[in-house]
Picture (cartoon, chains in turn orange, purple):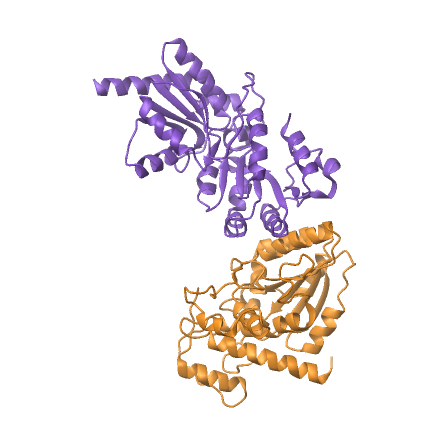
Length: 285
Length: 307
C-alpha cells in the first residue's frame, strides 16, 4: 500500500469520524465504539470487499455483517462517503422520517441485516457462508464483532458450528477496543489470551493494529480461503479513537454532546484543540 | 405417506429447501442420504441453527428446521423473534414432541406455552396438525407460504385414520356441526375429542367438532358462526390456559363485541405430570370419557342457569 493510498484512506476515515461526531448530539449515539471501528469499516469498503452501489443484489457480492450493531454510525458515515446513501440523510439521525437510528437496519442500502442483539450475526453469517459453499461461489462473509459481545455464549457456539462446517469463507473481525459497555473487558469478563482461545477453537488467527491501514491490508490480503478453518482477525483498537478527550474513557460509551462540544470535538479531531467536555454522558442502556 | 417421505419429496423437487436440525433426527433419519448437503445438522445449538437459517433464507433458501419444541421455541425464542420475525424470513420451524407428546420427559421438555409465544411474533404463522395424515395434508401449503411458520409437529398414526380434507392456511376443518356442544381442538387431542364426540352422540347430544389446524391466522369466520349455532363451546388443548386457543377465542369475541359460553380444557398454571402418554391423558383428564364427562357437566350447569 503506497503512501498516497494510506493518506487517502486516513482522510476518508477522518470524514467518517466527523459524521460520527455530528451524530453524537440531539439524542446522541455510541460514539466511542463507532470511533474504534471506523478504520476497519473504511478499509473494508474502500479496499477489500466486492460490494458497491451497483452490485447490492448480486449473489456474488461479498457480505459484511455488523454484529455489535451500536457502532453503526461508522457504517452510516462510510456508506454516505462512498455514495451508498446521500450524505444529507445523516442529518435525519433519530428522526422518524428516515431509518437512521442506533442500530443497523436493511432500509439503508449496503446494510445486509439488522443487529443490536449481541451474538446473532456470527450465526447469520454462517448461513450465508454455507449457502455460498453449497453454490460453489467464492464470496467472502465478514462479520465484525465487538469484544464485549464475546461474553455471549452464542458467539462461541457459532464458531464451533462454523468450523464443523469448515467455513473458511467466513471472517470474524474483532473490534478489540478492550471495553465492555461501561467497564474494561479485562476488569469484568476477561477475554485474554484471546488468540489462544480462537486457536483452541481451531480458527486461523491474526492479531493486528486496527488503526493501521498497512497492517489491515497485510492481514486481509493474507487470508487463506481454502484452509477449512474460520479466519479470525483481532484488530486492537482504541475506543474513542481520534478524540483524545474521550479515548479509552469508560464514561464515554454512549455520548450526547451539546452543540458547542460538537464544534470543539470536530476541532479536536483535526488536532486544533483539546475539547473540554461538560456533558454528563454515561448513560447505561 | 410419512412426514419424512413427504419432506424428502418436496426437497428433491425444490432446490431452495434446506433441512436443518439441532441434532434431533428422530423423524428425518434418512434425509442425509437422500438430500445430501442440503441436510445441515448444527449440533445441539438451537440459537445458532436459527441464525444460520436466517442467513440461508437471506440467500433465497427455505430452511425447514427441526428441534424439540421446548428448546426451539424457548431457548431460541429471541433468535426467532429477532432474526426471522423482524425480517419476515420464510423459515419453517418444526417443533418435535410439543404439548403432551413430551410424555415422560418432564417439565423441561414441556412446550405448553409455544402457541402463546410464537403467535405473539408479527408475521409468524402457527400450525398444529391433528395426526400424521393431517400433517402431511398441511405441510406443502405451509412450506409454500412466504411467511415464517411454527408447526407443532404431530406425526402420530391414530387408530381411526381420519381422512382429512385439503388444507388452506387460516382455515379450520369442520368435522361436524352440533347445537349442544362444539369442540374446538388442535393437535393430538383431536383423537380423544373425536372419541368424546362419539360418546356424547350415543347419549343423544348434537355435537360439533372443529380441527383448528391453523392457530395463526385463525379461522375467525367459522368460530364466530359456531358461537351463534351452539350452546357450549369446549376448547381442548395441551397448552397453558394463558395465550392458547381459549385466549384466541377471547380475543376474537371481544374484538367482535360478543360473547359465548366457552369451557376451556387446558393446563392451568402448572406443568403436567410426566409419564407415558396414555398415563398423562388419564391423570390430566383428557381421555375421551373425561372430555365427555366434563362437557356434559358444563352443559347441564349452563342449562340450569338458563332455566
